[in-house]
Image 1: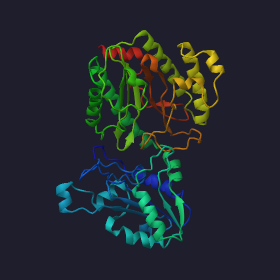
Image 2: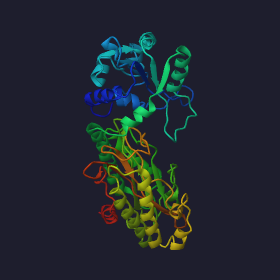
Image 3: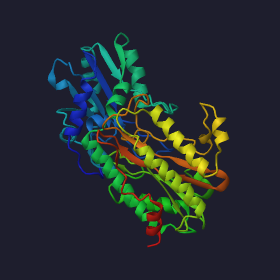
Image 4: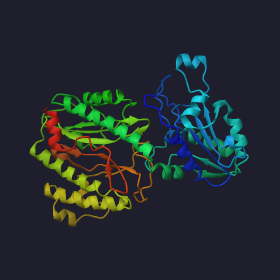
Length: 429
């Protein structure tokens, strides 16, 4: 792996907390992600399933984790199954993990090859009353492609129809919402790498550069700093493209007088950062661009202060919406009459600020988390207000990553310049 070794105590602690969430006499099974095909004999680069990584630290395909806290034999309470290597695999793909390495990384003492899974799983299932299985329950998940988890679920129900089945997703959502100190450190590293990428970009952006050239500069900096690459497809949007929320074509030439909106993140040890900055292609904002930018900057500063324990997404979005409305009136984009005629489900500000202001961040960019759960110490949320004026071809978004603590919000991306004057100074230095 490119990232530095992670202390196995992180994963051992995660498993300990997980085991306490299970009902008695239960077995839980976690699978690695599939190797996803492209065409012919091609495959996409492998990306580990976040839940399996969270509980084991194993970053290799064809892996299964079995947790059975009440197993009669202690060695079967945590069992890791990994792909058996061979000389042929070593020649074509490189060395795979040994069983000893599996133990060193995960802290799990009982490690078998995958070929032993069916036999050991059967023996443990017959000791158990409940089987916990995993599915993707993210509200916006695309379930078109059948996953390894779903295939196993179908097989398991057919093979063991009389067992009680339980959902893993709510447990993992509960656990992964709160980041440990070691997890926060990994997210901080992803943020530090993103900072380096942004500072690199500020030195190269000028009229005539193409969006994909900017994207290339970002990717270069990410990879050279031990990242696998972008945590998600980068949005590099100039001019009118800055008003397209999920624009990823990144093929336009940046022109004099444009703003350039960049929404990108670094992956580090499977953890993500998620940063958005908007800069002037010419090195200096126009008066109108700066007014809009400063409005978004003010909104963000106030919104970050609301990321405290006890607040909720519902209250948070409602209060931020009021701030956005005031700024839009000051910019001449809304009137008090527009506000008075708005509907509760469709506030007037949505014309210029269409998306949510925050989401959970962690092993996934849009990390799992209950949006009805009050904010708690240890959560990491983004804060990303924006104003998009399509008729003026000006889209501004500023996004920072915030750790919620009892002492107040901690901005993990505070070193990534967002002050407009600082951005201009660096671009022109």
